[in-house]
Amino acid sequence: MVKVSIIVEGGVIDTNVSAGTIDNSNALRESLYWIFSEVLDRDDISIEVHMSAGRRLAAKVFKDAPNDVFLYTDLDREPEKKAEWFVRMETENPNEPIIFTQDKAERIFFMIQEMEAWLLKQPDAIEAWAKSRNYKHFADRGHVSTHYHIAGKDIERISKPSDKLKDILKQTFQSDKLRKNGKAKGVEYGKLKTAPGMLRFIDVNKLISCDAELLRFRSYVVLIFHCGEKS
Figure 1 (cartoon, helix red, strand yellow):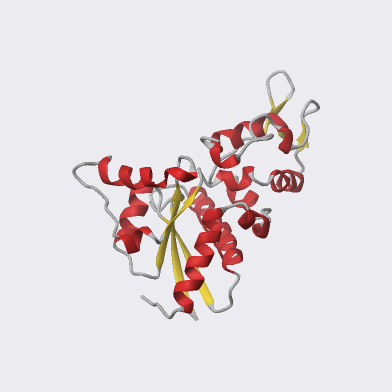
Figure 2: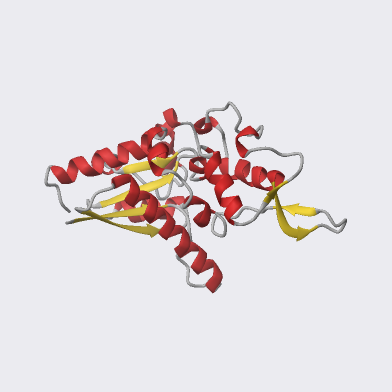
């Protein structure tokens, strides 16, 4: 059996944070582990997921890592603009440019535009998560798929999916908290607090069919290890 390590942008690595934050970060890592395991779907490949907080830190750690390590990071732009991400790594800090070899660059994969785009691609997963939490729709709101942020749109061209998901939850589902006027508040979204549970409702096979980066990741990992490459 071969091992694959995946460095993912996000989470926390600083122990100088609350126990709750660390627990939430670990929960996010475990949910991402589940997704990547489902994507690869191979008994002969084991994976490890490591959270690396911010984008630059994740990139730095990955740059010096061995060849069985991959990087998964937010692209923060449209899929055809991957080259801009690499330029940004080289130029945003002139005193400390991050430059990747071609071999390293091939092992970088992107969540387009952010991880939350995976969830926006599957409104049914959001609905199922909300149902599991006993959240009810506001009376004037329908299925998540009808929300103006995503209805009829190409999700990979929606900027700041995390902000859009935050709006959708807050405007669609009632929390158990009340406003001063006695009306229910909307459900709040937090990447560490909320995303781990939501990701578990994703249909990974359907997600792969509409996410070229996940398909590229699976194909690349299976190919290199099938050819006998090891770190």
